[in-house]
Image (cartoon, rainbow, N blue to C red):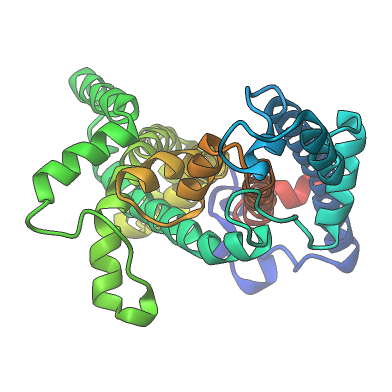
Length: 343
Protein backbone atom coordinates (compact mmCIF):
# COMPACT_ATOMS: atom_id res chain seq x y z
CA UNK A 1 0.00 0.00 0.00
CA UNK A 2 1.43 3.37 -0.99
CA UNK A 3 1.61 6.41 1.28
CA UNK A 4 -0.93 8.27 -0.85
CA UNK A 5 -3.41 5.41 -0.54
CA UNK A 6 -2.83 4.95 3.17
CA UNK A 7 -2.86 8.47 4.53
CA UNK A 8 -6.12 10.47 4.33
CA UNK A 9 -6.28 13.43 1.96
CA UNK A 10 -5.88 16.04 4.69
CA UNK A 11 -2.32 14.84 5.41
CA UNK A 12 -1.18 14.80 1.78
CA UNK A 13 0.97 17.53 0.34
CA UNK A 14 -1.12 20.17 -1.46
CA UNK A 15 -0.19 18.87 -4.90
CA UNK A 16 -1.45 15.36 -3.98
CA UNK A 17 -4.88 16.43 -2.75
CA UNK A 18 -7.98 15.78 -4.75
CA UNK A 19 -9.02 18.88 -6.69
CA UNK A 20 -12.09 20.81 -5.71
CA UNK A 21 -15.36 19.59 -7.20
CA UNK A 22 -15.89 20.81 -10.73
CA UNK A 23 -19.04 22.57 -11.85
CA UNK A 24 -20.14 19.38 -13.59
CA UNK A 25 -19.81 17.44 -10.37
CA UNK A 26 -21.75 20.09 -8.47
CA UNK A 27 -24.49 19.89 -11.08
CA UNK A 28 -24.68 16.12 -10.63
CA UNK A 29 -24.90 16.53 -6.87
CA UNK A 30 -27.67 19.10 -7.35
CA UNK A 31 -29.47 16.70 -9.71
CA UNK A 32 -29.28 13.94 -7.12
CA UNK A 33 -30.69 16.26 -4.45
CA UNK A 34 -33.54 17.23 -6.78
CA UNK A 35 -34.37 13.55 -7.34
CA UNK A 36 -34.34 12.96 -3.59
CA UNK A 37 -36.54 16.02 -3.09
CA UNK A 38 -39.02 14.67 -5.65
CA UNK A 39 -39.10 11.29 -3.91
CA UNK A 40 -39.63 12.90 -0.52
CA UNK A 41 -42.36 15.08 -2.04
CA UNK A 42 -44.22 11.98 -3.21
CA UNK A 43 -43.89 10.49 0.28
CA UNK A 44 -45.23 13.74 1.75
CA UNK A 45 -48.25 13.73 -0.57
CA UNK A 46 -49.00 10.10 0.30
CA UNK A 47 -48.75 10.85 4.04
CA UNK A 48 -51.05 13.87 3.89
CA UNK A 49 -53.60 12.02 1.75
CA UNK A 50 -53.62 9.07 4.16
CA UNK A 51 -54.09 11.50 7.04
CA UNK A 52 -56.92 13.22 5.16
CA UNK A 53 -58.75 9.93 4.61
CA UNK A 54 -58.23 8.63 8.15
CA UNK A 55 -59.55 11.85 9.67
CA UNK A 56 -62.85 11.26 7.94
CA UNK A 57 -63.17 7.81 9.47
CA UNK A 58 -63.06 9.20 13.02
CA UNK A 59 -66.51 9.13 14.63
CA UNK A 60 -68.12 12.54 14.80
CA UNK A 61 -69.36 15.13 12.35
CA UNK A 62 -67.44 18.44 12.01
CA UNK A 63 -70.69 20.07 10.92
CA UNK A 64 -72.23 19.36 14.33
CA UNK A 65 -69.09 20.74 15.98
CA UNK A 66 -69.53 24.00 14.07
CA UNK A 67 -73.24 24.17 14.84
CA UNK A 68 -72.43 24.24 18.56
CA UNK A 69 -73.54 22.12 21.54
CA UNK A 70 -77.03 20.86 21.88
CA UNK A 71 -79.34 18.74 19.80
CA UNK A 72 -81.69 21.43 18.49
CA UNK A 73 -79.97 21.76 15.11
CA UNK A 74 -82.13 20.47 12.29
CA UNK A 75 -80.84 18.02 9.63
CA UNK A 76 -81.30 20.78 7.03
CA UNK A 77 -78.97 23.07 8.97
CA UNK A 78 -76.39 20.28 9.30
CA UNK A 79 -76.60 19.62 5.56
CA UNK A 80 -76.12 23.35 4.83
CA UNK A 81 -73.06 23.54 7.08
CA UNK A 82 -71.59 20.43 5.46
CA UNK A 83 -72.09 22.03 2.06
CA UNK A 84 -70.41 25.26 3.21
CA UNK A 85 -67.45 23.29 4.53
CA UNK A 86 -67.23 21.19 1.38
CA UNK A 87 -67.78 17.98 3.31
CA UNK A 88 -70.45 16.81 0.88
CA UNK A 89 -67.85 16.42 -1.90
CA UNK A 90 -65.91 13.21 -2.57
CA UNK A 91 -62.83 12.79 -0.37
CA UNK A 92 -60.42 13.05 -3.30
CA UNK A 93 -61.98 16.34 -4.38
CA UNK A 94 -61.82 17.66 -0.82
CA UNK A 95 -58.16 16.69 -0.60
CA UNK A 96 -57.10 18.47 -3.77
CA UNK A 97 -59.16 21.54 -2.85
CA UNK A 98 -57.38 21.66 0.52
CA UNK A 99 -53.98 20.99 -1.05
CA UNK A 100 -54.37 23.75 -3.65
CA UNK A 101 -55.43 26.20 -0.92
CA UNK A 102 -52.51 25.11 1.29
CA UNK A 103 -50.11 25.74 -1.61
CA UNK A 104 -51.34 29.36 -1.57
CA UNK A 105 -50.75 29.57 2.20
CA UNK A 106 -54.42 29.19 3.13
CA UNK A 107 -54.88 26.34 5.63
CA UNK A 108 -58.44 27.29 6.42
CA UNK A 109 -60.11 28.35 9.64
CA UNK A 110 -60.39 26.46 12.90
CA UNK A 111 -63.82 24.94 13.41
CA UNK A 112 -63.62 25.32 17.19
CA UNK A 113 -61.26 28.21 17.95
CA UNK A 114 -62.66 30.39 15.14
CA UNK A 115 -59.19 31.55 14.14
CA UNK A 116 -56.95 31.10 11.14
CA UNK A 117 -55.06 27.79 11.16
CA UNK A 118 -51.98 29.58 9.84
CA UNK A 119 -52.06 31.97 12.80
CA UNK A 120 -52.53 29.14 15.29
CA UNK A 121 -49.63 27.17 13.85
CA UNK A 122 -47.30 30.15 13.57
CA UNK A 123 -47.72 30.74 17.31
CA UNK A 124 -46.82 27.14 18.16
CA UNK A 125 -44.45 25.81 15.52
CA UNK A 126 -41.57 27.84 16.99
CA UNK A 127 -42.06 26.17 20.38
CA UNK A 128 -42.11 22.67 18.88
CA UNK A 129 -39.06 23.34 16.71
CA UNK A 130 -37.19 24.69 19.71
CA UNK A 131 -37.99 21.57 21.72
CA UNK A 132 -37.00 19.31 18.82
CA UNK A 133 -33.68 21.10 18.27
CA UNK A 134 -32.89 21.10 21.99
CA UNK A 135 -33.63 17.36 22.21
CA UNK A 136 -31.49 16.62 19.15
CA UNK A 137 -28.64 18.74 20.52
CA UNK A 138 -28.92 17.03 23.90
CA UNK A 139 -28.85 13.60 22.26
CA UNK A 140 -25.73 14.43 20.23
CA UNK A 141 -23.92 16.05 23.16
CA UNK A 142 -24.54 12.94 25.26
CA UNK A 143 -24.12 10.24 22.62
CA UNK A 144 -20.99 11.30 20.73
CA UNK A 145 -18.59 11.88 23.69
CA UNK A 146 -19.83 8.75 25.48
CA UNK A 147 -19.48 6.66 22.32
CA UNK A 148 -15.88 7.86 21.89
CA UNK A 149 -15.15 6.89 25.49
CA UNK A 150 -16.96 3.55 25.25
CA UNK A 151 -15.24 2.62 21.98
CA UNK A 152 -12.08 1.97 24.00
CA UNK A 153 -13.83 -0.95 25.71
CA UNK A 154 -14.67 -3.78 23.32
CA UNK A 155 -14.88 -6.80 25.61
CA UNK A 156 -17.95 -9.03 25.69
CA UNK A 157 -18.92 -7.65 29.10
CA UNK A 158 -18.73 -4.08 27.77
CA UNK A 159 -20.81 -5.00 24.72
CA UNK A 160 -23.48 -6.61 26.89
CA UNK A 161 -23.56 -3.59 29.19
CA UNK A 162 -23.92 -1.21 26.26
CA UNK A 163 -26.75 -3.26 24.75
CA UNK A 164 -28.54 -3.33 28.12
CA UNK A 165 -28.26 0.44 28.58
CA UNK A 166 -29.32 1.04 24.99
CA UNK A 167 -32.33 -1.25 25.27
CA UNK A 168 -33.48 0.39 28.48
CA UNK A 169 -33.04 3.88 27.08
CA UNK A 170 -34.99 3.11 23.91
CA UNK A 171 -37.69 1.11 25.71
CA UNK A 172 -38.55 3.84 28.23
CA UNK A 173 -41.52 5.81 26.79
CA UNK A 174 -40.95 9.55 26.66
CA UNK A 175 -44.25 10.34 28.40
CA UNK A 176 -43.45 7.96 31.29
CA UNK A 177 -40.00 9.53 31.66
CA UNK A 178 -41.70 12.94 31.59
CA UNK A 179 -43.91 11.94 34.53
CA UNK A 180 -40.89 10.70 36.48
CA UNK A 181 -39.05 13.96 35.84
CA UNK A 182 -42.06 15.98 36.97
CA UNK A 183 -42.21 14.04 40.24
CA UNK A 184 -38.46 14.19 40.82
CA UNK A 185 -37.89 17.87 39.99
CA UNK A 186 -41.20 19.52 40.84
CA UNK A 187 -39.55 21.62 43.59
CA UNK A 188 -36.33 22.29 41.63
CA UNK A 189 -37.30 23.24 38.07
CA UNK A 190 -40.50 24.47 36.37
CA UNK A 191 -42.53 21.43 35.43
CA UNK A 192 -45.39 23.07 33.55
CA UNK A 193 -45.78 25.88 31.07
CA UNK A 194 -43.44 27.71 28.76
CA UNK A 195 -41.40 30.90 28.80
CA UNK A 196 -40.24 32.48 25.55
CA UNK A 197 -36.73 33.74 24.94
CA UNK A 198 -38.04 37.30 24.89
CA UNK A 199 -39.11 36.87 28.52
CA UNK A 200 -35.56 35.97 29.53
CA UNK A 201 -33.08 33.32 28.41
CA UNK A 202 -32.69 31.95 31.94
CA UNK A 203 -36.41 31.38 32.45
CA UNK A 204 -36.72 29.96 28.94
CA UNK A 205 -34.07 27.29 29.45
CA UNK A 206 -35.34 26.44 32.92
CA UNK A 207 -38.75 25.60 31.44
CA UNK A 208 -37.21 23.60 28.57
CA UNK A 209 -34.70 21.47 30.51
CA UNK A 210 -37.08 18.72 31.61
CA UNK A 211 -39.00 18.43 28.29
CA UNK A 212 -35.66 18.29 26.46
CA UNK A 213 -34.38 15.46 28.64
CA UNK A 214 -37.65 13.52 28.37
CA UNK A 215 -37.63 13.78 24.60
CA UNK A 216 -33.89 13.36 24.02
CA UNK A 217 -33.01 10.37 26.22
CA UNK A 218 -34.37 7.73 23.86
CA UNK A 219 -32.66 9.27 20.85
CA UNK A 220 -29.36 9.69 22.70
CA UNK A 221 -29.19 5.98 23.56
CA UNK A 222 -29.88 5.00 19.96
CA UNK A 223 -27.23 7.41 18.66
CA UNK A 224 -24.81 6.20 21.32
CA UNK A 225 -25.14 2.57 20.27
CA UNK A 226 -24.90 3.41 16.57
CA UNK A 227 -21.88 5.69 16.91
CA UNK A 228 -19.99 3.36 19.23
CA UNK A 229 -20.44 0.34 16.94
CA UNK A 230 -19.45 2.37 13.89
CA UNK A 231 -16.44 3.87 15.68
CA UNK A 232 -15.15 0.46 16.78
CA UNK A 233 -15.36 -0.78 13.19
CA UNK A 234 -13.60 2.33 11.88
CA UNK A 235 -10.78 2.08 14.44
CA UNK A 236 -10.05 -1.45 13.21
CA UNK A 237 -9.79 -0.37 9.57
CA UNK A 238 -6.54 -0.43 7.60
CA UNK A 239 -6.21 3.31 7.05
CA UNK A 240 -6.51 4.05 10.79
CA UNK A 241 -3.84 1.49 11.63
CA UNK A 242 -1.64 3.01 8.94
CA UNK A 243 -2.19 6.51 10.31
CA UNK A 244 -1.13 5.28 13.74
CA UNK A 245 1.98 3.69 12.26
CA UNK A 246 3.02 7.10 10.94
CA UNK A 247 2.98 8.40 14.51
CA UNK A 248 -0.14 10.55 14.20
CA UNK A 249 -1.39 11.45 17.72
CA UNK A 250 -4.30 9.36 19.01
CA UNK A 251 -6.46 12.45 19.52
CA UNK A 252 -6.07 13.34 15.83
CA UNK A 253 -6.71 9.74 14.79
CA UNK A 254 -10.05 9.91 16.61
CA UNK A 255 -11.12 13.44 15.73
CA UNK A 256 -9.94 13.66 12.12
CA UNK A 257 -10.05 10.15 10.70
CA UNK A 258 -12.07 7.69 12.77
CA UNK A 259 -14.87 9.88 14.13
CA UNK A 260 -15.63 11.56 10.81
CA UNK A 261 -16.39 8.26 9.10
CA UNK A 262 -18.08 6.84 12.19
CA UNK A 263 -20.54 9.74 12.22
CA UNK A 264 -22.03 8.76 8.84
CA UNK A 265 -24.51 6.24 10.33
CA UNK A 266 -25.18 8.73 13.14
CA UNK A 267 -26.25 11.39 10.63
CA UNK A 268 -28.51 8.85 8.91
CA UNK A 269 -30.13 7.76 12.18
CA UNK A 270 -30.56 11.37 13.30
CA UNK A 271 -32.41 12.20 10.09
CA UNK A 272 -34.62 9.12 10.27
CA UNK A 273 -35.39 9.76 13.95
CA UNK A 274 -36.70 13.27 13.35
CA UNK A 275 -40.11 11.83 12.62
CA UNK A 276 -40.09 9.93 15.91
CA UNK A 277 -38.75 13.03 17.64
CA UNK A 278 -41.62 15.16 16.37
CA UNK A 279 -44.08 12.42 17.30
CA UNK A 280 -42.63 12.20 20.79
CA UNK A 281 -43.01 15.96 21.14
CA UNK A 282 -46.78 15.49 21.00
CA UNK A 283 -46.79 13.52 24.25
CA UNK A 284 -44.02 15.47 25.97
CA UNK A 285 -45.68 18.83 25.27
CA UNK A 286 -48.92 17.56 26.80
CA UNK A 287 -47.13 16.16 29.86
CA UNK A 288 -45.38 19.48 30.56
CA UNK A 289 -48.23 21.70 29.28
CA UNK A 290 -45.91 23.23 26.69
CA UNK A 291 -48.02 25.27 24.23
CA UNK A 292 -46.49 23.74 21.11
CA UNK A 293 -47.95 22.22 17.99
CA UNK A 294 -48.16 18.78 19.56
CA UNK A 295 -50.45 20.02 22.33
CA UNK A 296 -52.54 21.86 19.75
CA UNK A 297 -52.79 18.70 17.63
CA UNK A 298 -54.00 16.53 20.52
CA UNK A 299 -56.59 19.12 21.57
CA UNK A 300 -57.80 19.46 17.98
CA UNK A 301 -58.18 15.70 17.53
CA UNK A 302 -60.28 15.48 20.69
CA UNK A 303 -62.42 18.41 19.51
CA UNK A 304 -62.80 17.00 15.95
CA UNK A 305 -61.25 20.21 14.60
CA UNK A 306 -60.29 18.76 11.21
CA UNK A 307 -58.81 21.88 9.68
CA UNK A 308 -56.31 22.36 12.52
CA UNK A 309 -55.37 18.67 12.51
CA UNK A 310 -54.76 18.79 8.76
CA UNK A 311 -52.60 21.88 9.12
CA UNK A 312 -50.56 20.34 11.96
CA UNK A 313 -49.94 17.12 10.04
CA UNK A 314 -48.94 19.06 6.92
CA UNK A 315 -46.38 21.10 8.87
CA UNK A 316 -45.00 17.96 10.53
CA UNK A 317 -44.63 16.26 7.15
CA UNK A 318 -42.86 19.32 5.72
CA UNK A 319 -40.46 19.41 8.69
CA UNK A 320 -39.61 15.70 8.44
CA UNK A 321 -39.16 15.83 4.64
CA UNK A 322 -37.01 18.96 4.90
CA UNK A 323 -34.80 17.42 7.59
CA UNK A 324 -34.27 14.27 5.52
CA UNK A 325 -33.32 16.37 2.51
CA UNK A 326 -30.93 18.36 4.68
CA UNK A 327 -29.37 15.08 5.84
CA UNK A 328 -28.68 14.23 2.19
CA UNK A 329 -26.82 17.51 1.81
CA UNK A 330 -24.84 17.00 5.03
CA UNK A 331 -24.05 13.44 4.00
CA UNK A 332 -22.61 14.58 0.68
CA UNK A 333 -20.21 16.91 2.50
CA UNK A 334 -19.22 14.46 5.25
CA UNK A 335 -18.65 11.44 3.03
CA UNK A 336 -16.48 12.04 -0.07
CA UNK A 337 -17.72 8.73 -1.50
CA UNK A 338 -21.15 10.27 -1.99
CA UNK A 339 -19.62 12.93 -4.20
CA UNK A 340 -17.58 10.29 -6.00
CA UNK A 341 -20.66 8.20 -6.71
CA UNK A 342 -22.19 11.18 -8.48
CA UNK A 343 -19.29 11.47 -10.92
